Length: 360
Ligand code: ADP
Ligand code: MG
Image (cartoon, rainbow, N blue to C red; front, top):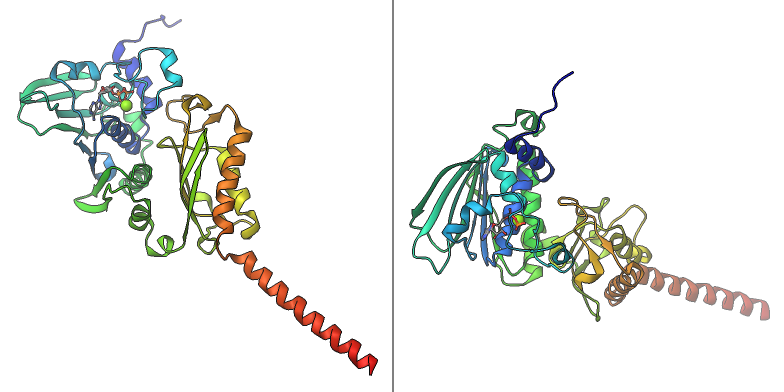
């Protein structure tokens, strides 16, 4: 019989890290969300080698005070919640205090950060959960994270990584999603020294759609606006001409967070049903705001599935908002309608002629 042993902290952290950090895009997600939580207005994400060997996230947010830097890397350290009750009202993005400790336990991390109150910045290095350096440096206000050689100490996880190209495209897709969720933040993405995306941060959703999806999509949008007490919707619904054969163009954000929800997906697709061929899916980019007490987002740290307290009401409001946007414009069924009217008129004329010929 093998002996029962208690796992050491570094092993526990590595196992826990597996739940939060699966691949480079999970690192980028956590670091970007932290930057957003830190009130940054401009964030740069840079990756090399699909993010496997190098990830940099630089923000101009509030920074971390020198004395708090090592704390940020402890498991369950967070400045965002104090108790379980807070979980139900918190509107910031990350709030489990697990990301940095997880990342630091499976990669080589360097942090340079400075708050506006402090005169000099802090440089901190941590590898595989072990502190390597902690010193003062000159730095601009804000925070830079460098994450090198992901899973260098966990070969079993490294084996599950795909090619640099595939990992890089996961990161790119994630950065685009986050850019679309935050039109108020200028987001730059650099991949292998090439600029891939740069949003202006000017609040204009249509500009972002143009930047991410191109002209054809941006030219075929109908505005969606709806303000109700519990729920506000703001964004764009694509005309049916830009429909796709999969759901990858159904983008929606709840309280700034990219989520998946069967209920929301259904409300969108049901609203499109009269205008859409079968197996076609619309383009939408919707920002939905809802009172936090109607939501349960904290079901799982990485799952984006969402639960509602009053689902039926949410469905109805969303369905109506989109239906209204779609019915304002000349769409396919109205073209059909015109055709049917014309056909009816022709048919009537024919009947008329027939009757007359009989009368004669
Ligand atoms: P959480 O985001 O759930 O609080 P993290 O492990 O992601 O946990 O981060 C721990 C803490 O480190 C945060 O609560 C925050 O105080 C600080 N922090 C992390 N990233 C940044 C950043 N880019 N700017 C300022 N503070 C940060
Ligand atoms: Mg976080």
